[in-house]
Image 1: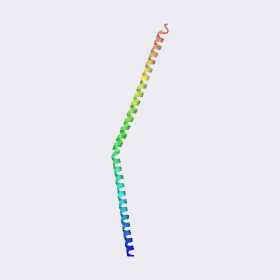
Image 2: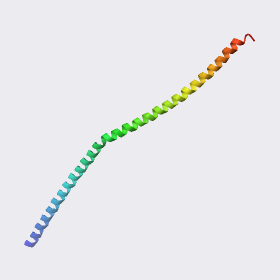
Image 3: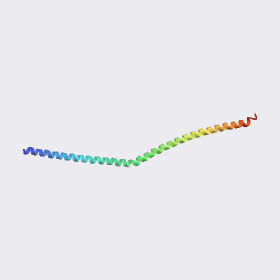
Image 4: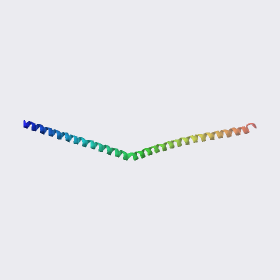
Length: 105
């Protein structure tokens, strides 16, 4: 019976060691996960200014493209209006000239 009791005590001690070892490994895993999460957070936080600058640069680029497009449209419309004004001026000059010389003929 002493031998059986001794084996049971040995088995219990091994079980306790295994349980303790498992708890230590679990704690180590938790600590490592927390450290990894903090490192990831720190890396992301450090990148925020770069992300912000990148966002601003892209927004400025889009704004410049929009301004260029608006200027191009404005110039096209301005040229159209100038051409129309010149045509109307020629028509008006011709009509005025015809009015001046028309009654005498």
